[in-house]
Image 1: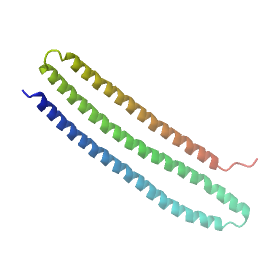
Image 2 (image 1 turned 120 degrees about the horizontal axis):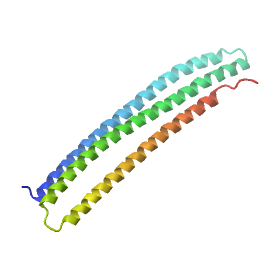
Image 3 (image 1 turned 180 degrees about the vertical axis):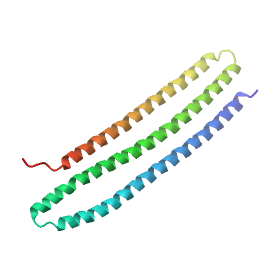
Length: 184
């Protein structure tokens, strides 16, 4: 049978190892997200450079100011749609990265909770008489901490969903604003 000190030392070591594993996972997910954003930006810059050259040639080929304005108006809508698509893609990357964070943190929390509960059960079996209240309080604290984490996770998910909805709405409004108005 292990002493309390040995049990807590083993639990602490396992907890630190699990925290390091979580940190490694989160770092990896962060770099993957940054790579996706960099790739998105490089692709957007390449496409923008190619398109701006073609657009400039079209504008320079205009024969009169009205044709110049018509070409400008025609180029505005695709540009706005591409900006909106870029925003949606960026939001998708952020949302995916946040989901990966959440999954990793939830898995870590579940494992840590399982280990702590097992430790508390083991300690409570060997605890001296009269310590039942202290063990009940410890279990309550852990339960409350888990409930708080679940609420925090729920709020983070709602924030990301709100951000995505706002970006999609802004993109739709930008596209609508860039659409040339028909003459009455």
